[in-house]
Length: 188
Image 1: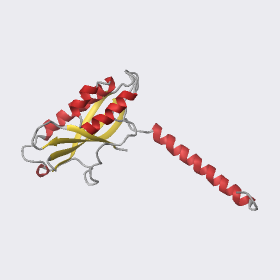
Image 2: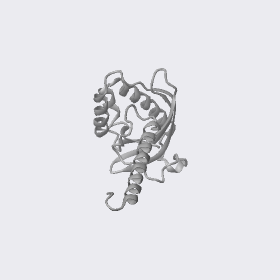
Image 3: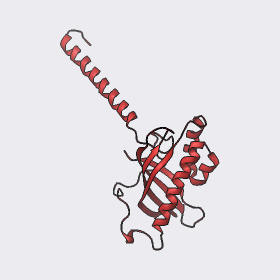
Image 4: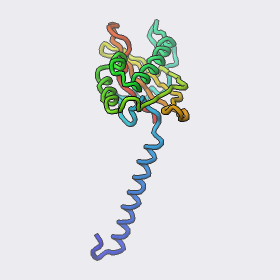
């Protein structure tokens, strides 16, 4: 490295050191500024791919929704289920989580819950908004993407922090089950 080229070797070493410092700072910044996420999911990715790039704003036109679809009722139920899943996940109530999720999502959440000690996690939803981003039917299933945002408190004495995430929900067209959580994307 330094053989016959002292100044070049020192410059290379200095560049490597600067690169290491920048990489370390970027990684620690990402950890400290991570948004609040679904009870313990932290940096995990969703089970289902993210919604298409063009669907970043809520469904706004009446023509975009199927006839008879009660968007307001759907979003009320989605918000209720959001809070119920937070509580069930905090408490490690695996059977309750199963009722609201696809099998793939259940396995991911179950693994997370089993890794934690009971009572370690606390999530208090102090403010919650929901927007329907997309509603589609494909391969015999209805798919909905709902953006949740608001404030949560992760410790009993902590200050509320903002969060934003998209939940992907699926329901069979034949109505054989209700809406199930199929994936979660963190909005950074």
